[in-house]
Length: 158
Image 1 (tube, rainbow, N blue to C red):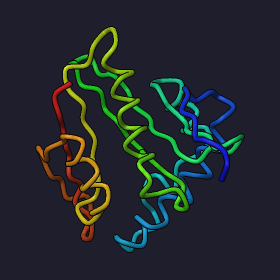
Image 2: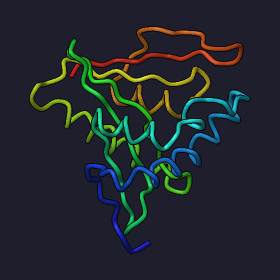
Image 3: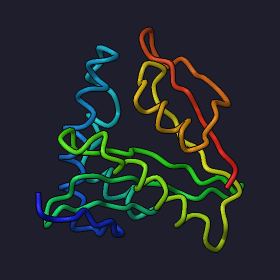
Image 4: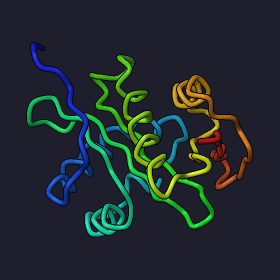
């Protein structure tokens, strides 16, 4: 490729690119669960903009292209909730998801410091579960949200 991927804070101008990438990345999840009504595929641009304004988001760029992203919010209880870690399909399995996860954790380890990190994924999303376990996350709860989908909540200490 000749260019390196850079990670930086997302800006309001990145919202549309993030939403398009999110739609692309969650197609595989929709296939796994046979459900194309999952929230990442139905989220509106206005909802995404509000989410970006509430929390913190990072993007990974290859040149000018947004190729990966992750978002998170700090809770008053010391828990940083991390969500929607997405990597363009052509760049998956090259460590970019792990780099983004490390970067968002480092952000929330600042002041005020998070005591724990929490995220969730579907019970059949083996690649996601493998990455999260490799990064030290452990399952702490499950919640059935539909006939085909159980969400697994994972946490680790900060």
